[in-house]
Length: 482
Image (cartoon, rainbow, N blue to C red):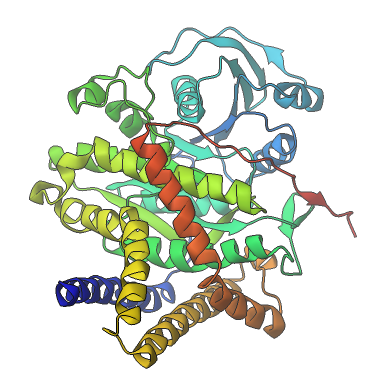
């Protein structure tokens, strides 16, 4: 039995490392060829965008976020802030900043949502107040009252580069089969704002933030970019993504318990909910297109186009990772019919099995592996020197992945002369070495912590908990103009 378990674990981790290295090869192979040649304003004007900002208790960051959104370099867009029954001054701070006028719009309930209490407009900025119904419900309200062809969802605590929207809409211009586009997130903690632009010259001192910088570079960017190249990406961050409005209407919008759309009802999703609406809607879109045998693509961009504030302490971070893992479990449960189903092509045959085995079940298998290795070593089944070599190999692999990701992102960003290079969190060789060392340390501290958080998420999923676990925002620092 020991040898059977040993061989199964060896096969599992060999597959795990093989996929990781395939992702690295894809990343190296393609990222250098990425270019940012964008269309002219005339072409972008054919793709007008409604930017939907769901907001709940966002008084700290909402004004700065809206100010930056209104300054985006894009020929035709509107910003729709949906205040989801906030208990703070989210609406009030905006109303003090902009001279809104209350307007009466006809009922546009394409998607059923919670009740709306007021709608105000100032130029291309719309403020909608509604009863509390959650983030997905707020986005659906925004979709209902949007007037543009494209829908961009962005978190109220996120900041975009002035050219980010063009870069993210570009894939739709290049290929009509693209149904969602998104980009790499960058950690915004401790950055400063100057003339509505993110600037930073130092690595954050908070080690929890440092670990997430590495995680965003290594785990999120390399994996999602590679999955995108394999046309198998299932997650497009809700912090910043772009969709076609018609596609979202056809699949019923974002999933909420009160959503009564015909397609959601057809696939058995009526009354369902998830704490990770961004993943579920992408999976549902894949399902919709493949069931109709329509060519579809989801595009993940490799460069940092959106900065977002991340948890800066263990408690808030555990809650966030708990929610992410619950959301993964909920999405797989809702769309379980897609697993190993050939008609869903790479999504059913590769993406779903990957997320099931190497993401959802990963914390359980890793904990079991540790218990098994300790038991086997104590009872003399394994050589201690062999165990040490395995640990060293794993750690070096992690450090190599981090090194490759950070160097390639920096060089690609500098080569393309992006303004976002000012937000790179490693400005010197010392910063870069610090990230590598922190990455190695994270294998022994942060990784076990993340596994624990994911396990609590699985337990909460089994208990059918739907807590959002929102963490407190500190906002962005401001730097005086020079």
